[in-house]
Length: 288
Image (cartoon, rainbow, N blue to C red; front, side, top):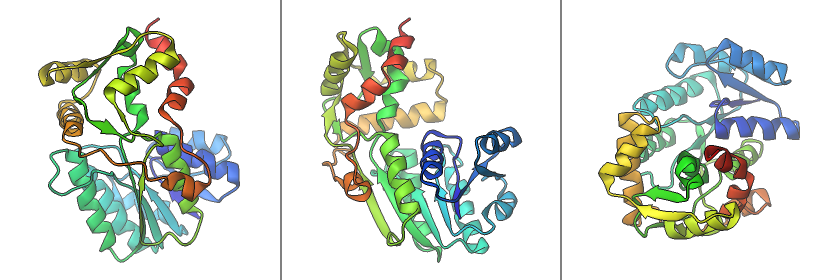
């Protein structure tokens, strides 16, 4: 049995969908009773579990051989994930498949990159099997800027830095694959998209697919920080995002395409143009 944490999130939810479609036994973990009921109405096994309440994890993990571990970036991420890893070991879970970050580094100025590196170290030494997935920056992050994009602008602080942007759907596809297969114990996979793009090229692709001109604006950091706050990001998240996107300028995210997604799943990853086409309605609705 596979336990899927983060089942109400973008990656975890897609993992659940893929496992259900393939007929693979799994259990979705959610924090709220109404979320558990929603999964059950959709024909999925589901259980209550909260990383902030480690005592709830024992029942959630019962009879599970493999666990999918993913949490959103928060100041509590290290405590949540290390508690989950320790609980999994006590419960007899044989392997944990964890979503990490390609830029994970204990010296990184990006808070979640540093946190992921520390959690990865904890996982490797925890005495439980592990598989670590290290995706680059997500294409879905561009949806944060759908309002200005709909008006013809892509605001950023990334200079001329480039990234092999990856679609979260492809990350979930890799996760579902390695969760349901043997042979991935002790493996670390770097997951990228099929090409490396800077923001100017990303704006060009947006223009081509959306059929209106989108111009890249390389903003001063204070103005970008204000934009992030106005779009609902917390102070902690805003500070981290400014550092992360500025970190692109230094080339810390400039990883050549690895082709691991196609090798592991047998399917090519989505291109950036694919992503924009599949989310065209969201970009269009923002401007209406």
